[in-house]
Length: 427
Image (tube, rainbow, N blue to C red; front, side):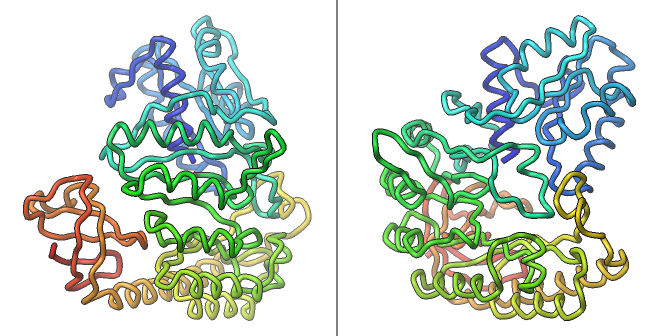
């Protein structure tokens, strides 16, 4: 989401005479796009602000801005108390950046963190920041209505609102004409996408199908799904269109129904398992990844074991795994005690990571000997003689180039694997 937002910001600034530079030492304006989902992200941003402060000491005309999700939470501290930035803009205030820059340049406080119920930036053509020119993101909605008790997103990104499907299709078509071969549709909860116009309702399964029909040679991915909204209709659309990638990121967060209830996730362990079973049944061979939070309020050893058993049962190909960190203003912060000791959180997280490493390795080994269609994205990080790409199941494959180029589809036979990568050759 932050990459997509940064591309919108670059478009707005470009239309107002600004030019992007890759060298921070050349910049007269430095904007840090931020995320407030986890505490360590905030700590990194604060450290980064202090690290670039020396540039302003050398040249007082340089303007530094904080944009995105951290803007609302930290506006007073970074502007008034610590004097780390000259301006602050929330995720719905990017159109006001040119005027904020003008105010900051005149020595005034420049701040806009107002949230909107309408803003989707649908009319803005993003300036693409991706390096390979092959894959890109398209934001289909903003905000979130799911009030998960641990999550700050609804407070910093506002209520859920979907984008006009016509503008989405135009953006995908624009990417197609520019040579892109893969598009990822983005939303805090893509499954709840809904657009009403002229008595007709466009749901996410229908939108996904329309995007897929743009060009059968363009791969379509999406993220993120919510288990409570994952429908069989969506799964059937995925199975019907070969260019809709066979990978679903389905955050579980916990394997314990008791903890899921405290998290206000609105599903049980049994519901989640039913959705995984539906994926396996309707889309054989589909890979599944997840998010796991360990150490949530009151989590017991039994709850932890339920998470481990769910992971083992689901056989995730990949997972994002975190220790719970209390976010100010959330329901969990207001109502529950963060009562799991830090050493217990760390130990449980290490056990989760260790299990996932085994699951990821097992998943890759099962692919040895199989043939996959791979979209070439770039050279391998280690050698210009090798290329790198991903399967429809979102698994990274490295193989000798043999004259092939970025943007091409090739069939690769998998010969070996590591826990993170498949290794093969073009056939």
